[in-house]
Image (cartoon, rainbow over all chains, first blue to last red; front, side, top):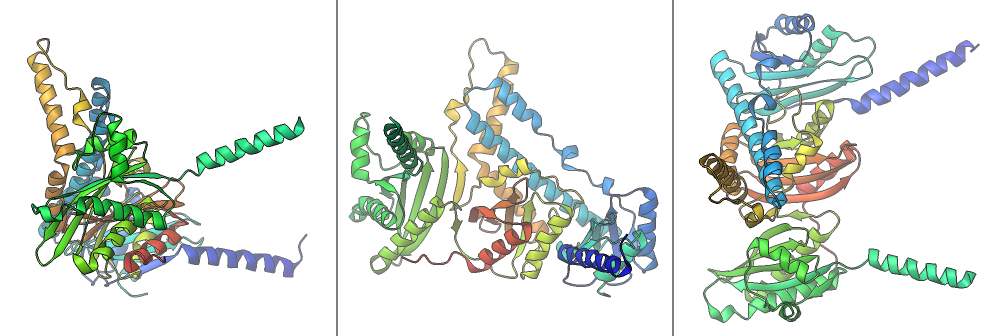
Length: 188
Length: 341
């Protein structure tokens, strides 16, 4: 059985340990705050119920939230699939491994560059057609893991806000989203 | 009996240690005079001999100068040529039992300037090419030292090459295999270091670049400086004959086209897409940072989007993610410190 001062000391020790670990994982950078009433697309990978909670927090703070889902963006596998090239080449050619490797690598790099160009074109279209000024990406994690967010100004394609926030045991979805909104708007 | 065993094991240990610590062998070819002025032909041998001397003074290496290379080549009924195709360089390095074969060319520029292009080929089939420009006469020795230092840096464990610093305020597009909070930390380091970050990769929730696929970016072709795999399409074995039907020929032509675009003419193909990317993001540099599986080590390649040139490469950057980020930012803003001799 522990006596009271000992229990308090142990609790303090763990609290200090948690604080130190949280501080080390926590980073924040804001180059220019998101203005109020601006058009934002919020991308988050969560259930519809959680997404509704998150969007509601942004709407409550005056943002014009555009309906965009992570699934609206195609992934690289949907657009490009070059795996067969390597398979066919290995089956049909002999003694050309270096040429093959180099061609495959270059093909992959070109696809990757193309993929990034395609994404930029889709984002430019979002900005022009739907007046989306900022792209906000969020990932909310449970207690003891790190939630993170970032925002991109679609006018310049500059990354303007990032934050890593270690989720504490008193946090819930609303609290984390409110904290992130305060952070990206320069309130805290 | 016991003593002889001890002596044998000592000799074996010494032999193994010697084998493990053998100095790398560097063979030098000519630097061809491309300036159409025969008065400078004497430099074709003087340059490689000077590089060999400078490198040997600083670096623990066995050098084979052109005159000795020629002697060895004669054993194969060959002679040292002034120029070679890239795929021929590997064969020469292997014939000379050298770890590296170095040759190149130079051209005299207006206003008493000279530009030297160097090919550094490893026996493993990797080719590092770079250029350096300096003044003739008074500064020629500085130029020789500069090139010798570039070669020595490249031969080091870090495989370091850097053509200049990346000034604060530059807009950088980063390709890396980190994701989520780790990727955010990486961005944080650059942003707080005074750089702007283009929203490539940052605009996706999940990173598509796996640790094995980012290895594809290790080799980069540039307008002046490149680090590439040497390929030889002659060994591709595009066989056909009377037995080949039209379907086979069509398929073969398509495959040849793929090799032509993505191997032989890759630099031009890449330049077009880089222009599009540059227009979309208005960025100055592309930085590729490849982390190992444990995220305890990283390598870097940096491409200048506007000049389409490889401007920085470095391997074996060890530490945690924050330590690696800090080392990268420091090197970006300070460049390579001058070597103390």
